[in-house]
Image (cartoon, rainbow, N blue to C red; front, side):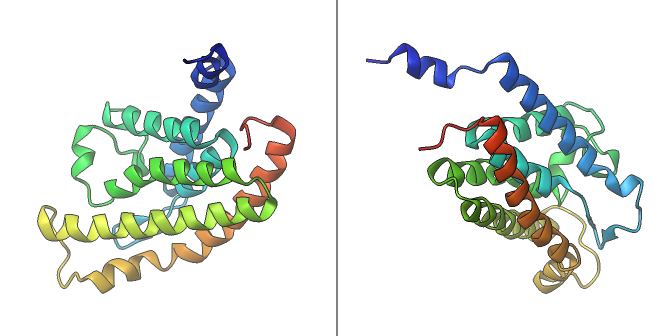
Length: 198
């Protein structure tokens, strides 16, 4: 039998919705940092802060609400709002070779949140952030490669190796930010206590 406590655990409060909206907005801001720093583009891959904010969403809001924040961000963009990188938007973006990264943000937030819901040490936060970053890179880069091979117009001489070479410049930045996200989220959680830790 389902208890009232179980129902309340799954029900989103006004505060939950506010945090979800906040992180969806942060994803939009992180996506378009290239508009202010146009040099932050390598190959077809813009260097953004989306991975950082997706990880923070999971670490601070938890698996369910963190993934929901990233899902809301994705749906707003697919609905036509110019919230993707380079102010892109619209359902046609699903055919973009880099759309796989947007999809992985949902998984990134979920996995990061899931890990720290089971263990809330500072080390767990950092490890969760690093694992989430690796998932983002692995799935996003492979999606991009197959997108170029199957339906997008690939640059001349494009190979699997080139796809990964495009991802090397932002990698150090994302790894450093992952560690920072883990430490920052750990400190924030000690104050806010949003996630019920097992």
